[in-house]
Image 1 (tube, one colour):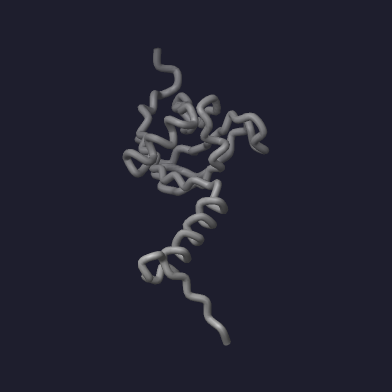
Image 2: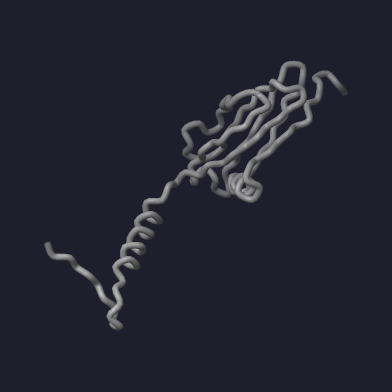
Amino acid sequence: MQQYVFHSASGKRYVPFLVALVIMTLLSACGSRVVSVRFKVNSAPEGAYVLYQIQATGAECAGKWIYIGNTPLQGMYQFNRDQLRKNDKIALRVMQQGYMDQTKEWVGSSFYEEAKGKGVIFWTPDMIPAGVK
C-alpha cells in the first residue's frame, strides 16, 4: 500500500495542515443555514399563552401566529438564516384571558443580535387588565 506524504520546500510534512484546510473548507461550504435562538418569556400572572409570528417573504408560516407554550416559558427555536434578514420581522405575543394582549416585535437581524449578545431573548411584558382606562 502506497502512502502519499506531502513535503514543503523545507522538507517539513504538511499533511495535517492540508487535511485541516480541507475540513474547514467543507464545513464552511456545507455549514448549517439554521440559527438556534434561546428565549425566556414570563408574565404576571403566569399561565399566559405565548405565540410567535414570522413576517418573511417566502416563509411557509409567514404571517401566522404559532402557539409555543404558556408562561413561564423557556425554549430554543431554530430559525432559518434567511428568516433573519434585515427586512423580515419576528414577533412574540402574550395573551391571557382578562388581560390585554402584549406584543413585542423585532427586525430579524436585531432579534438575532440580541439573542447572540445576551445569549437569550428575554421578555417580561406588563400584563394590563382588560377594561382599565
